[in-house]
Image: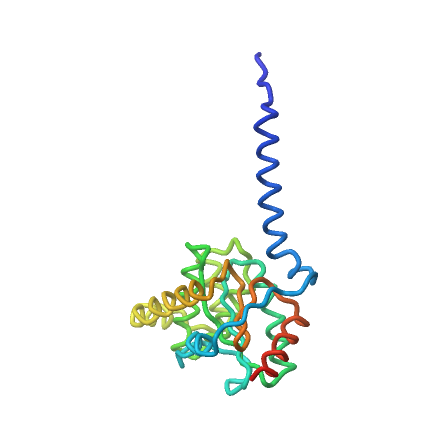
Length: 221
């Protein structure tokens, strides 16, 4: 029986490629995930910051009348976005000035788009946040049956959700297009990405980094 001979050149090349990719990801996201070097903050115009949150129907958490707005662009299948979930909850619990605005940006496609649509449709029964929390608690490998079960357990009326998905399809798709357009205008590389006051910060921030940026934005206002 003839044995195959390993192609060490190809294997070495593949290792180099993986190392480059890994190094790039570590450079962009590693420090922020591990609480390393300062977050690369970019200042934007107050007009652009206001434009991002100009739609009064955007889903929110925290103090709806809060003087400081934190906008999160996220994907339900993004592991770093799930890391951000408790940090944002803790921030709003500790700082009554903060209003969090959620902007679905399902860049992973497929089931991520479905999850975003279902969460937005839950707004019409006043249950966006329970839907959001339920979907964020699922693993990245989530599928539609898992999503249906999680949403139903969170108190979402699933027959009504189906009706609202159909009745408000144009509004939902328009919101997703707007979110994507905003993310592109802001130059975000991926999820999660944040707008805090009139500053942007890509990547998963620690709770301390979030609070620091909120305090800095508040001093600038």
